[in-house]
Image 1: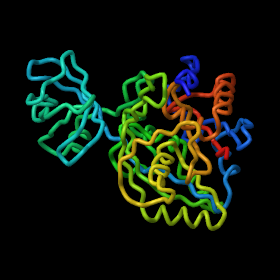
Image 2 (image 1 turned 90 degrees about the vertical axis):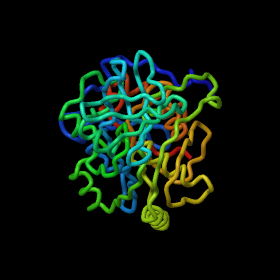
Image 3 (image 1 turned 180 degrees about the vertical axis):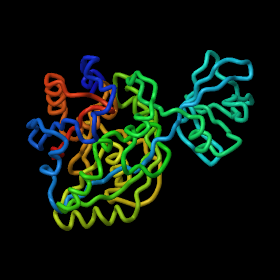
Image 4 (image 1 turned 90 degrees about the horizontal axis):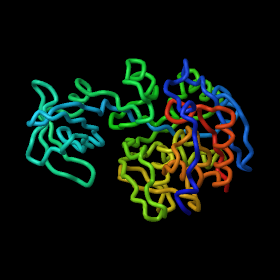
Length: 339
C-alpha cells in the first residue's frame, strides 16, 4: 500500500480546539463488523457493550513536558521531553536557531540548568540536576498537540488527562479515554463490564505523519509499555466467558498486540515499535474505542487494518459530511474487528 491511500481533506473548522462541555458529551460513530455506520452519542456506549466484555484502559499520565530556556549564548531554546529515562535523565526534542552542542548547558530558571550530553537521532540526551518529573511539574507546560492552537490553560490540565491517569510519562494523552467519566465507568461495572489496565507512555511520535510513499520504508517510533499479570488473567477469563476484549484507544491496543506477538499474551514491560497496517491479524482485541486520526498517520493505518481500508474511508467521509469533531478533543468511534 502507498501513503496516498491514507490521505483525506479535512476542513480546519472540524479540528476540535476545545473538549466538549462535559466528559462524554461527544458523538460516537459506530462501525460494525459489516462496515455499516451508525450515528450515536458517547453516552450510548453501554448499549454497544455486553456483560462479560472487558475494557482495557491505558493509565498513563501526561506530564508537563514542554520547557523553555536559554543556551549559554543567550539564545532561546524550547524543549519537548519525549521520554524520562531515569530520575535525572531524559530524551528531548530541541527547537533552537542553532542546536546546543553536547557539553553545553541550558538554563531553565535561575536555579535550574540541564546538561546537554549527546545526540540520539532526532533527540538529545539531557541530564537534570534534580528529578526530571519535579522540574517538569514546576516549570513545564502541558504539551498540547500541534493542531490545538491556544496556550494550555488550567482547564486543559484537567481535561487533557483521563480520570484514571496514574503513571506519569506520556507527552500526549491516550485520547479515547478522555470521554469517560466516573458515572460511565460505574454504569458499565453495574452492567457486568469489567476493566483492566495497561500502561503505554505515548510519545510525540504519535503526531508525526508518515513521510515515505512505501509504508514498508517507514521507521516507527518506539514507546514503553507495561502489561500487568492481572490484565493477562482478566483477558483469559473474558475469553473463557465468551466476552470481548475492548481496547480503549490505539495505545491500549498497541500494548496488547505488542505483548502477544508470539501468539500468546505475556505480562511484563518492554519497548514496542509495532507498526500495524492493513493485512495485520489482530491477536487480542475484538473492538476498539478511538478518536479520529490525522491524515497519513500510523494510527489511521491501524484503524484501517482493524475494520478494512474501504470501511475506514467510508467512515471518515461520513464523519466529515456529518460534521463530526476531529482529533484529540474531538468525537469518538466504536469499531468492531472485521475478521
